[in-house]
Length: 359
Image (cartoon, one colour):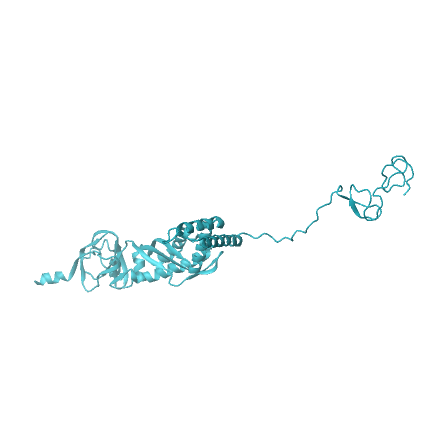
């Protein structure tokens, strides 16, 4: 190698980065040990941003495209280095390529249960899980707030902080929304939008953009799930009497398939039917609303018709209507007028002829 070739190899002529990873966010091309030749070719591909850093200070930022490095397209670096217009000498600078594509399918979830108050089940603990995607929106802000001066930076370096931010916002939104546990599954989209809306500000401060957030599942405590299952089963069963009759008929049909016989004998069948009916009545009574308790009606004696019995005018004994003399005192049941023979009851004068009644 000649002296010219050796000197030429110390200068960087082409600056580019071919990303072959899935999680690399920042790659440092030159660490400042080699000089960049003025007029070198800079290639920035789609989903990339190139940032020049001079002695720890952020300088010029290049978006996708092909550039020939000159003082004209590096105004910040020209000022920092106090170059004159048309400066052609090699220079030293660190070049960072920032990946601006979306990093998708990032997981988030609650490490510990989150407390919430439900109108049906009271205070309970729930867990939330989901995915989110983000990208670098402001490369200079990201380098300034997160990256620093490392040679490489991966998604895992920032994922922990982002996950904790989302979990904290999930707890806040879930507590403020006050959605009943039985309706949580139908509100995943609304919860996702509320969490994403609040999280975007925190992402922006880091130079990032939250592209999408999805709440995949909110798991309830085991005892609450059992209670929901029991309520669902009751709604499916509906009429307990009809359900018990159906179950009994099914059991009778299956018993006929037993080997060595026709199934239940008479006693077993009777016991099964009686037990099924008793269970149906008991359960039906337990799940039906109870009517308010009322006092038992008092027995009222049947009224006695006037034609059945009359009181004796002399002794008051009840005597049949057609009896002429009281069997108790022997006196006539009705007083009659001695003049005309018409009944007068207790009158002193006969209402028929006006004669005085002799008793």
